[in-house]
Image (cartoon, rainbow, N blue to C red; front, side):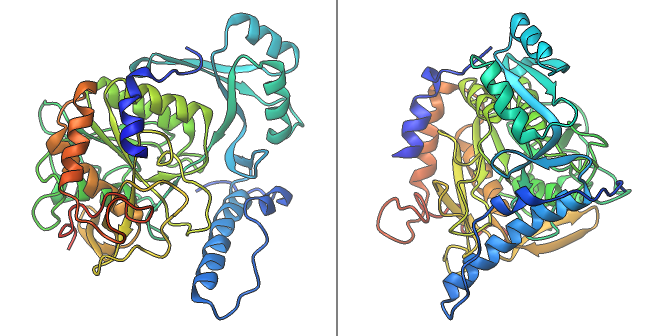
Length: 418
């Protein structure tokens, strides 16, 4: 069983190494993000897959067109921070070797909660990120080197938009939070008032966003919008702010470290993107310190590649279902699924004074996290197995009998978000 096998091994896992200016840029690499689209026929499933593939490509192409000064694609055609490579396991001798080849150090940062040191290298002028990735990897084979990939909210189109001028939710008084959120900022909606501690990990953060507000309300909302863990306190990390290159692996790693420092037991990440060496290491180190991570499997469709961080070992992948218990057709299928939860017409807060019914796996993940924290209120590695087993015990079987690849162990919080 993927979930439990990954979770039981956590203590033994080994981690490598200790209003924007618009710039027109060429986009030849964007075509590699997805294969050529098939000719559409009368098969609804084929049409859906082709449409979702096109939407994914368009999203990245638009980002490159509008923010080419901050974003470019890596050697696999995935969007990342322009001109930056991130590395772990780098010592002084390696830094000197890299400098001799033109890779200057931008900064060296220690993420205390994860006991992780990260070095950011500048790509030499005139060199593409894709070419620099390959060259620095060969130069420093002992290190873990990658692009600073970007991760996108896995909710409905437009749900990641900022709310300019909106007040952000804030904590009243002290206290600890068992629940954590890595997303956009959370607006001061009455359902979460006085129970959200926020910190920014991007330019202009924390800043209220529709997506972050919605996910927070589905976690801890009470009153008109009731979350799966109503009344709980929440530690929320905004990794987007106003930066078009926000939501990057570096920001998420810093956010995980902050959540670990706050003794968060269960963290929700409704963001999706590619496998990334820094993110993989950060997730693993957070898990080793007892954190359970719940992540959405994404909305790019059955043909989309695995979505991370949901696809990492030990992370609980969540899909969305409609009111009849059917998996959303846009939900990812290549990412391992551990649980399902409502993901269609889910009532959530979207601003300081607004609520909407939303759709997407983003809004299923917090419902699972909110239920899980009842069994796992504190980060204790020795209690992971029993806590996840308890959550499995309340899941309602869907699809094929027993655990399956579409619904995982079954439906959690079936009446939530209605």
